[in-house]
Length: 182
Image 1 (cartoon, rainbow, N blue to C red):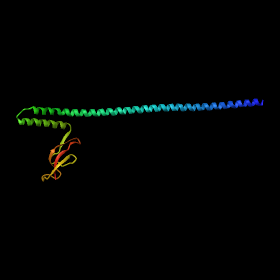
Image 2 (spheres, rainbow, N blue to C red):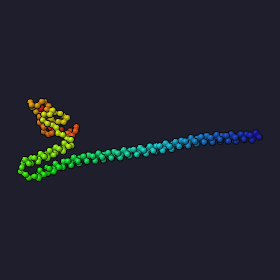
Image 3 (cartoon, helix red, strand yellow):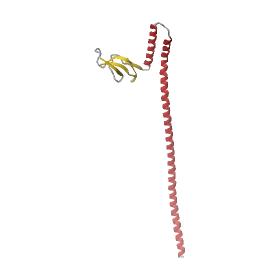
Image 4 (cartoon, rainbow, N blue to C red):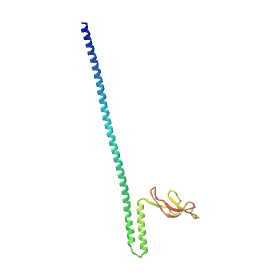
């Protein structure tokens, strides 16, 4: 009988151990399941973030390309509209060349009218000339190509203009070539 009790106790102990192991196994399975679920959730978030990043990158690339095209288009449109303003002046020069008149005054008047037409176009484009005799020399907009003494003008004053300067707003298109007094 002692052996039977011993066997029974051993069976109960094994059964108790199995129950404990089953509980541990269930706890372990729950932790594993939770970790797997967390991993899947993080992988999904990573994929969504990566997709969002790729979309933003593609949008930026498209924006950059569109901006470049718009910039080129604006430049070409501006250039075309400016050149279109000059075409009537070219037409007038063509007429002057084709004119076979001996009347110098009429010819001179036509050239003056064409010159004034060109000045009006420049004025409408906000282009102004500078560099007149008597102005104070400014190295930021004038180019002194000669110096001379002139008792009638103060020192550092423009005494002769070889080429007028032109600017559009604050931007100098061409420096004025001048002679200044010493």
